[in-house]
Image 1 (cartoon, helix red, strand yellow):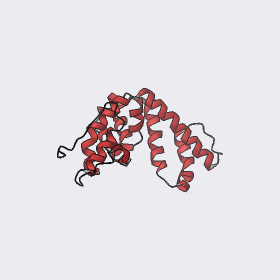
Image 2 (cartoon, one colour):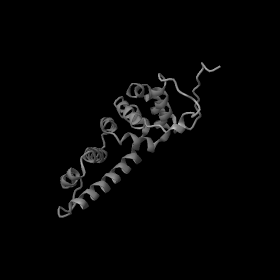
Image 3 (cartoon, one colour):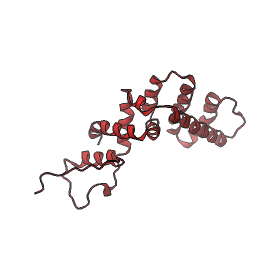
Amino acid sequence: LRQYATGMVPLKRAELASQGADGVRKLLAFDEGCRALDLLTSNSAERKQLLLHSAVLRWNALSKMERLAEAHRLLAQHVPGAPASLSDVKAAERIAAADAQALDALVATVSIDALLKSELVDFAVQRLVEAEHDVPDLLVWTHYSMPCEAVGWLRVLATVTKDFTRPLAVADMTIP
């Protein structure tokens, strides 16, 4: 599906542009989206929030045991004034809460239009398309047997456009 995901980036960009703050939140779920925003921002408070969120994205990719072990380091580095005496679990909870707060602040201040102007954001958009490639069968007409050469791109198209507010029809012109 990756070969078709690249072609779906412009459609996904249009969808994200119409979603405003929700579009920003979706893009910032990927490190590539954070890097794109990092190039656009000169505000030091936003940059600190972005550094925390990027660190938490990498932290979330670790195993549970590694996350617990790493929680105190992240807390000390990104949450000033946090008590060092917290348990690993409480430190992890505090990091997650700080990240949620930072992400909410970023989403409230960042314009989706400005973020989508960055060429780097296309990598995040492509990752988003690939992450959403699991299409429920009900998005594709159940009484139609798709040609094998169309399965990939049609499923990606259905995924990308499932939240569009405007109707979209794709027709097989070989059917009489």
